[in-house]
Length: 324
Image (cartoon, rainbow, N blue to C red; front, side, top):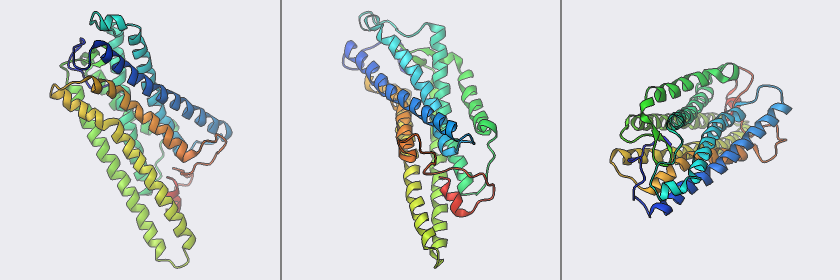
């Protein structure tokens, strides 16, 4: 919900007032319901894992859990906002009035959307950097209690941007977010998306190169057949996992980049306005799909397919790869 609309009152920019209303409300509601339920499922699986294994939960569980927190908060806000809009259909369609929450509350919701989306973007970038440090640099990074060394920097950045642009948030006719004429937030988000996308591509490409180097070393050893088979398996699984991380991020945020550019060019359409609050939640759906692929359907499966951590600070190359 970060990208801005070019008008705060409803205008004929689609297929008629009533049709536009259904498009704008239905698409975000449907997608965010799935994202909301998927986040709850990850919460449940993480709780079961913690309950049955009282030790520190591995990063392969914690990172999807952290991402699901941002997805859950975002989807909850969207469901709350568009449910409110649904009950104000007549005012929106017949009287062409704004149907968002009262001004102050709408401004707070807009700030919240900016904060949570930035948090989601930066969290994905942080995950790629931690993975790069562990696999490529073979550096066991102590993330601190509750991984505060990951959370504090991204929480600070995610907070400082919306708080410094409070004036830019408020009603947009049918929803709350960035108001018309305030493009600074769009520029900032566009830049952060580009930097994060570049970061995850570079980090994960380095991870794949590191695994291939280990594979080449093992190929030169005549008695390492079992290790080679294991490395080939890890390489395939790692490639699939990394590819899904990148594709989900692209699916989420490239449309927002396009939408922001359209906003800068004063181009607007009802389909774009409906898709933006939906595509962000596609990340939540992608997160649950990837979680099920990596961890399986059974909540009693205590061992992750790809572990991201080991309790030892000094690790062998094969152990480093198996962290994924």
